[in-house]
Length: 250
Image 1 (spheres, rainbow, N blue to C red):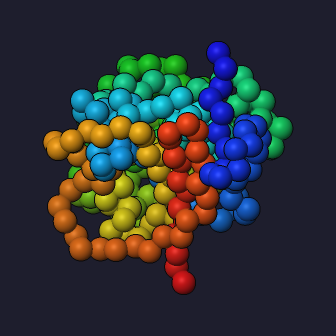
Image 2: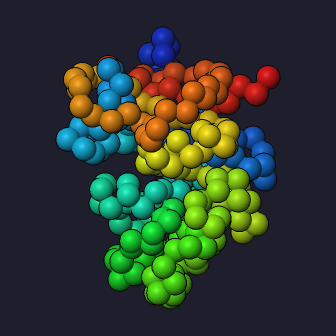
């Protein structure tokens, strides 16, 4: 299957996987970095028929897979894991070769954020994981569920009743997982925004209109916060746009 051509907007020159990866690489891997990745319709919908995957395009899928090469840990909220049908975090052979050639472990760690621990410890995402997953939860989570999951994952406590983004990032960094790639969901994104913990947003604009009803890429109650962002680059593939923004802390 031919990969979709992706180019820097306005150039028309198709980029290789290595060139795309270089555009998203963080210079100093030892510095903590939180990247979030979402797709949206032209009119701002974050899902089609309740799933973000319904908005995906071939170019979005290509860049989505390449971004996993760069991270130490892929972080996802439990609701998104269930809704989007996540399985084990296993990269393809080309990605494994790329990571090993760049001094990285073959696969990133898969970390799931869940305050209630409504997760099945016998699910393939645990049973077939190439690397022992992490579950990030809170001290008030049901003890029985915590013990069951501790048999198949490393369980980290990042707060009492609510997962604290700063504490979570510190716990991951203590394990050498400084480069964090978050794939959702909207409520986890909102928590990161409230804590001003987002360093980068990768947003694909899918060339469709969804109309009213679908949720946004950020969920929860209005907060009135605003975080300035700087545009790093724009990639294009036919009618799909792939935007990379970094946090403007000036």
